[in-house]
Amino acid sequence: MRILIASKTLEITTAMREFAHEQALKLDKLGQRISKVQVFLDQRVAKSKRDRNALVKYVVNLPGKTIVIKTKAADMYDAIVDATDKVFRQTRKFKEKRLTKQR
Image (cartoon, rainbow, N blue to C red; front, side):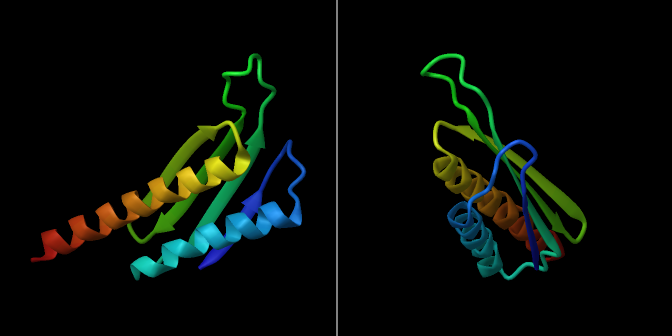
C-alpha cells in the first residue's frame, strides 16, 4: 500500500505528516488489497469562528472501486481522524458487500 500525503496551500509539518500516515495505516487492518491511499490536506480562511476551516480529502484505490471522502473540521488533526473513520467504514462496507455477493 502506497500512501501519499499532499497539500497545495498548507505547509505540512513532520508531525502532521506522521499523524496522517499512522491514520492511513489503520486501513491495512481490513485485509483489503489497497493499492494506493492519497490524503490531501487543505486549510481555508475562516470567515467566522463557527466556520470549519480544515479540509481533508481521502482517495482510496481498491480493486474495482475508488472511495473518495471529504471531511471538514475546526482542527486539522480532528479532520484527519474523522476522515479516516469514514474511509474505514466505507472500505469495510465494500468488503462485506463483496463477500455477501460471493456467497
